Structure formats: C-alpha cells, structure tokens
Image 1 (tube, rainbow, N blue to C red):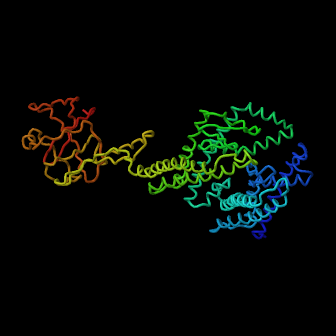
Image 2: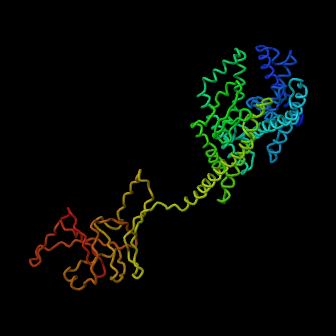
Amino acid sequence: MARPLYVTGLVGALWCIGIGLAVLTTITLVGWIGAPRTALGPGLPGVFRTAVNFWLVSHHAGFSAGHGRVGLLPLGLIVLPGALLYRSGGWMVRAVGVTTGRRYRVGVVHVAVALAVPYAILAGLLALAAASTAVSASVWQALIACFVLAVLAGGLGAARAVVAQNAADDPDARVRSGLGALLRLLPDRPRSLVIGVTGSMAVLLASGAVLVGTSLAMHMSEATRLHDMLAPGFVGGVLLVLVELVYLPNAVIWGMAYAIGPGFSVGANTTVSPTGVFLDIVPTFPPLAALPEPGPAPALSLFALAAPFIAGAVGGVLTVRNMPSPVSEAAPLWGFLSGALTGAVAALLAALSGGPLGGGRMATVGPSAWQVGLLAALEVGISAAIAAWIANSMILRRPAKRTTAPSKPRKRRWRRTASPATPPVPAKAAVPPEPPRAPEQPVPKAPRKPAPFAPDPVEFEEAEPVLAPRKPRSRTRPADPLPDLAEATEELAPAEPEPEPDPVPDTRWASEREIVVAETHVPPDPTDEEHPPVPQPRDRDDSGRTENRGGAIYVLRDEPGQD
C-alpha cells in the first residue's frame, strides 16, 4: 500500500540526516580520541555539536567563530549528503508509485519538493540546537543550502527512477546516471543547452585539474615539508589527508579561474593570475604548496588560457549537434546562449569555492565570482557561437550533398532499331541487358540458345532499306534453285555499297517473325567442260558473302571440314 507523498518525504529526510550524522559523528569521535579533547569540544555534547556543524558544513552552510566568519568550506563533503539524497529520491518514487504517464515530469518535481521541505526544516532545527558561544551555524544559510541540495540531488534520483520504470522492457533505453535521466525528461532545446553547458564545464574543470595536478607535482617537496611542519601523527595524518581530499574540488575550481583569466586571491591584496603572482604570508596547508612563486606567471601555465576557447568550441558543437537549427542565423545565438549559461555556472562554482577564512587579512580567499562569470561568458560564448555556426552549416549541407551527388555512370547498351520510313523488317535479336553485377564476383553469362528454325551455319542478315518488302515465304514451300550468279549481278545492281558484314559471325535468337534462309550448296557438274569447278579459297576474310536474289538475301559461307 503506497504511503502519502509528504509522509514518505519526511521518512526519506530522516533517513538521510540520520546516516549522514552517524558517519560524521564517527569521524569526529576518532579525531576527538586522537587529538586533544578540547579541540573538538568539551565532553560528548561538544563532540555532538561539532558533528552537527560538520554536517551543516557539508551542505555548504557557513558558521561564525570567535575570530570571524568562516565561509571557505570544502566542496568535497557535499558528496556524502548528495549521495544519500539521490538514493532517497529514487526510493520515494518506488514507494509512492509515481505513474509514468503524461505528468511524470510533474511527479518528479513533487517528489523533489516533498523531500526538500522537511529536510531543510530539520536542518534549520539542528543548526539552532548545535549553536554555542564558540561556534554558531548560520540558520538561513542552512535552510537555503539544504533545500537547494535536496531538490537537485533528490530530483536527479527521482528522475532516474522514473526513467528506469519507463525503460523496464527496453534494455537499450536504460540510463546509468541521474543526469542522463534528466536529459531524457527535458524538451529538445533545453536538452541541447544542458548538454552544451555540461561539455563546456567538463573541459574547463579538466583544465583546472590538469593545472593544479601539474603544479602540485612540481612542488611536491614543498608540500612534504609543510606536512612535516604540522607533525599531525598517525591519526591526525589520516584526518589531514581527508581534509586535503575534500578541499581538492576547491583547488580545481581555482585552477579553472586561473585558466579563464581573473585568477584567485589568497588573502587581501594578493593575486594569482596569468598577469602575475602577488602573494603574502600563506597559511601552512600542504595543498597551498602548488601556488607559483611571486613574480611573472610561469610560461607553462599560459597554455591553460586556451581552455575557455576549446570549451566554447566543444559546447557549441554539442549544442547544435543534439538539435540543429533550420535557420543558419539562429545557430550562433544558441551557441552564445550556451556559453553565457556556462559563464553563470562558472560564477556559481567560483562563489562556492571561496569565502572568508576568519577576519582580517584572510577575509578574501578564492576567485571573484562576477569576474570569472563575465570573462567565461565572453570567451566561451564567442567561441561557442562560431563553432555552432560552422557545425550547423555542415549539418545543413550534408543532406544536399547526398541528393545532388552524381550517380555512378553506367555503361550504355546500344540497340539497333529499324528506320520508321521503312516497313518492318526482321532485325537481329538483341541480347537482353544483363543485371548490374559487382566487379569482384562476375556473374557468368548464360549459354546462348541456338536458333530453333535454322542450323548453326545459317546467319540472318538485316535487309537494306533500298529493298522492297516481299511476302514472307512459307516454311513448307521448297526453296527455289539458285540462278546463275553472273546473271543476277548484271540484272540487279545495288544503288549504294552494301555494308561490310561482321567479321565474327554471331548467333542470334530467332523469333517467329524472322526470315530464316538456309544455305544451299549447288554441287558443280563435273562433266561441264566450259565451266569447270573453281576451288574456293579457305583463308578468305569475306566468308560471310551475301547475294540479293528476287527480294531474298542469301548468305554464302564457307564451312570448314565439309568438302
């Protein structure tokens, strides 16, 4: 039986808060045992207050101490409550039974809000309960930060659960992350913008990570020296490594701000940027050993200035690739909008990665949010607009090239046809065209079938246009004896020279309308003294001679081997 939505949200919020506090309380107890007990609060109540403050810090809620306000908070701690809220959002979808119909997007929003409202209220109550004279958390920051984080993480978990229900019967449609599920739920144009911003931010953060990692590797000896100066011991050393890891995302964002151009500061009147490095006394913290030496910026780090333009090119291409614009003039606008949104996200990350670290000189630490956002919007936006225009033009030209591409030339087969001015005369049977075949696998030609009405030595020749039509001769009528060839030559002279016959005899298909003339051999009279038989040469080229007699065409051919 499904529970009510907001009751399920309250249960999920309690579950997330309970597990998060249990993990951080355990870590605090380990530090309380290994370090001086007064450092983390007097007695177990002080340990519990410290654990609650750590839990609020993991949501990026600042607090005030005796020496001023602390806003430089580690972004790595957000992973713990974010993962719990992500799992809770998916569990609520399965527990409540959000339908997968037309209003499933609204159902995801309802689940996220139902989880975020009690979560933020409970966080505000914990901030009030853990307040003391030494350390007091900001209640309004706790309410806003916890509500925003619960909406984002819980919404992503709910979206993935809804998409998983829709794709239960389709293995190819399953997604493995909440961002992929959110992209499926968004409309086409917002989806393309989100993909473009994600690609640009991935390039910017990767450049910052490479910059920080390279600088830290080059100053590893200095980092080791600072670690030895602290002398934390075994337990304190493990806790110090954990603190360095949770501050690592802040360092990556500072490296991104350096690649964009404004850089960051480590205290008042200090700057670390490509234009120069101006530093004062730096806190003793091993990751800060990666800071360059005061003076001109290292030449190797100037290559990082190309990162915003590469990020804009990637974002612009991804934006128009997921949804091309039918109008070429609109593609640069969508690309620039993607770059502007990337600048807004970069400004938000810059604001979260920095903050005051007490009062006095360390009141300003980290990058300037508005400077990072403005320069990122211009650099990434311009390059994204150009890349989107080029990519969209290539996409629009691609179908036109396919349709107007010249086809492969085919071999033309010529067929002899009768002249329309002459009566229909039987013509040579044309060989039917062969189907197209691949050159790698030639299809053997079918054997030609001999003519059904004539023997092999008979060949049909096409009549000349000057001949008059004649009546077809019956097959049963015997052929007339051949007259003398000399008299036939004197009686009928051709009006124009006859075409030379084909040098190679060809066997054609015979039809019922064709006239088949059999070759007749007239044996010479051996007793005729005046006209003795003349031997026929064997090697003449004109073996296919034709004679015209009484409107009929006779083919005289030498047959080898038949004497």
